[in-house]
Length: 404
Image (cartoon, rainbow, N blue to C red):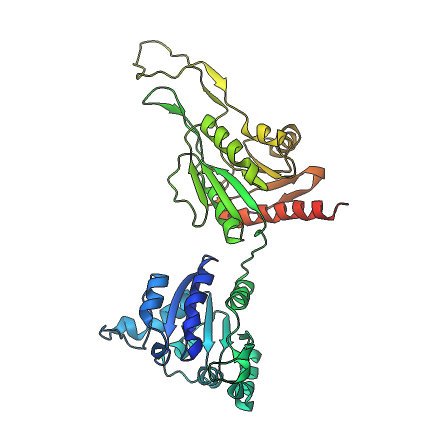
């Protein structure tokens, strides 16, 4: 998600750098907008280095850039692409401009132009904070839906003591997450996710595999990391980049995935087996390419290790989630897998249904619990489906916690 961070001219401007780092932990893309006064307290280069983006410092170009049509309407472009505008620190001057609709710089013009939610975190001298004008301006902004993160009390840079100190970084970040619907409800969990296909070699040229793209498993890993979990992603060969903030382990075949998962399972409180692991492999892979012959070719296959069943035998208090990609009798097969494997949840889908098969960005899933709970979901993006799966994991966790 994208947010604009407005930095205004007060001593607390330096704290905005720390705020950027904290918000990046929630996987937010941050566009910093600085007022002219803010640049007296902290350099734009600091924010450019932290965000990897140009810092907007003036209405028409700036920083050596010539004004042009693009720079003249940049405030509209930013206003349309952000999901939230955060002003931190917000001075009394900027609050007054926002309350009265004054748009004499990029930040105040952006405020008028955006339809995204707005949060302000004021910081100023205690007398300025308590002044009737400031309080009236804040009341006006609240009436318009602006969320105000109240300042802390304490020793201020001016030498006085009282309200006016910028709220703590964590407090502001929590407000941002609440407004954007970002949750940190998995912070206590370590989640091991498997994803992608496995490749079972026939000879140095050929291998047996399946159509899994890994998108569902990667979406689960991404969603879990965004919700605060420590994530270990074990992946077969795919063309996807691993999500940020996850520990990534690459494997090729079922044996490697089996060995890696069992080696790391002890660290996990939740295991999500989204990988499409080959059920069979050649008994004796050739060390040279098999040449074409005139007649048929027979390959002898043997079962691969049953990773889900082996993990379930040592499950303990872990929550175990399995997947069932089916072509018929989806509910029956999912229920049978739930009982046979001894898992807590099975996520099933009909891969023949449009928008629910392999290598697409959507899925249509039904989540089966032990004790008969069943959740049927409409077609969702794989990221949204991943979050619904994680919601059900939390339901299992909460049910265990409430059981005497």
